[in-house]
Length: 168
Image 1 (cartoon, helix red, strand yellow):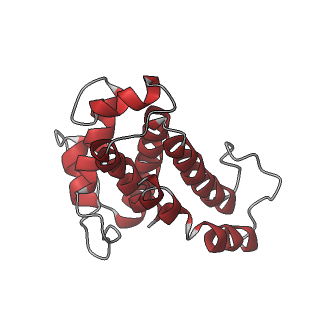
Image 2 (cartoon, helix red, strand yellow):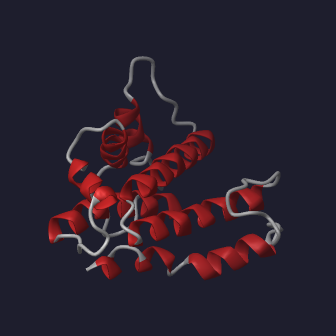
Image 3 (tube, helix red, strand yellow):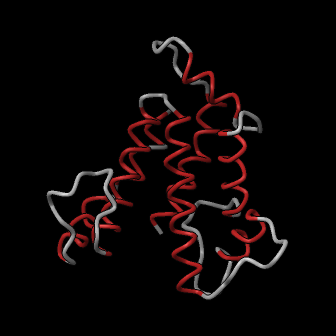
């Protein structure tokens, strides 16, 4: 069950990592360090996906949610800078992300169908101890020999979808 969530996020890791290195990303950069250059920043984003997948595969979805939300915020900021789609006064972050990621030439990867703002909202709600993803908290505190239910796996797909958007 879990194999359908994490490993697909890693399929582009090797070629994108090579591309970041070809562009000049430091091979000695620690995975948690953004680095001083744009290629290092790209490599940091890729390393963050690996960290989040590892956390999901270890049944630590809260940590994975933190990484996914941070990355979604970071790359939304990048998209804002490159697209010129600014957040309007009084516009919620959720509505803005939905508008930003639905702009011309921007589309989330298939099979992600949830608007990006809604993914952000779900992750935010979980990190604030509420919302539809709250059953994932059980995975962080349950006996590690317990297998996640199919309902848990479906909820984990929200984290996976947020990471897929970020890679795109």
